[in-house]
Length: 434
Image 1 (cartoon, rainbow, N blue to C red):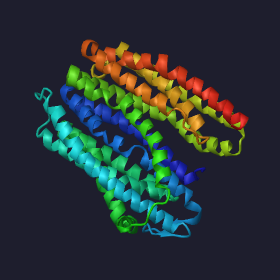
Image 2 (tube, helix red, strand yellow; image 1 turned 45 degrees about the horizontal axis):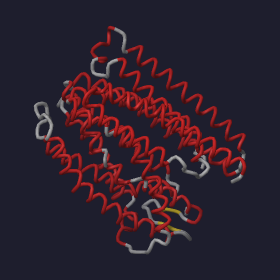
Image 3 (tube, helix red, strand yellow; image 1 turned 60 degrees about the vertical axis):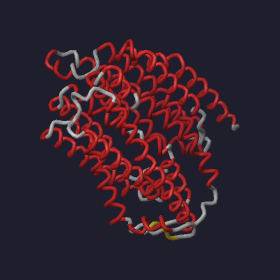
Image 4 (cartoon, helix red, strand yellow; image 1 turned 135 degrees about the vertical axis):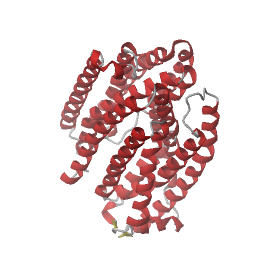
């Protein structure tokens, strides 16, 4: 599906905003939070990100399923399904609402006590005021955002792209502004609540007042005919999502437990900036994905290959230039204050190298995924588990240096060779029509 000019403009502006907001947030964090409070800020954000493990990619499958009904379906402005596929959409919506209601409740009653146990076992000398209340609020609003996911996915898949991405852009902009406000006036880790709270408030308003009929579908009880096929599709995507969390989010709480809040804060801020660079870099692959999928259906392998090569080349060049620029800027004496809040230069370079290799792997996976295949699931999961195991073994003795070296070594010796091998095999199969 190719995006219209208006849709593309929203996507582009959202990427620009992500980069700008990430930079401004980093500046606010450095200037308003102590090194210890910085550690709490990023540890709380990354710990509550466990909600992605409860979604397990089902929200993306709902986008695909509702998109498959698009030719015989129209959603009214209030969210009422109309057309030949309306009953199938009702069944899909009813099922998804019941399922997400269940996992949202499970999220609260499992993650809240787990987080209480984890954080209370740490040194609480620099903990934010009333941190158990903050943790409860974070878990609750994250559960609300989890519960809202199927509504956004169903509407996006049904063709109302502008409404969904307009909402997400508003959530991002107002959430960032709220975060900066709290950082400036309160100077505490309570700022970690701002983005998910604003997201939950705006998402709830959108559902209750802009798409009220859609919300009523939760009361209907039609049977979803191909539920088994949906679960079969989800478990593969779910493992990829789990791997993504393990590779990007879990290490800050681990480092907090072994090395304290200062080291966790340095890793958190460094990862935030590095991931910002990675997201912008990956945007060339993301924007090329609809075209790659189109030419895959047409079996125009040469054209698909040209699009992919151009996208990955620009993506990787941008990442290298941005990473080298970041490293060079941090060596300037005038910004020593900022550099002290990030990882030391050697650890920073190792981390940037690990993320660079992960960018290559992600691009290769996108190339094959555009043809409807997902052969990298087990590699992704094993990469995440090996990195997690290595981190738990070495972080206690070697701290963050051991952690980033494990990340780089697993990417170089395990992930990259296997991704390249599977990519070559799958590409040959596609070109041979098998």
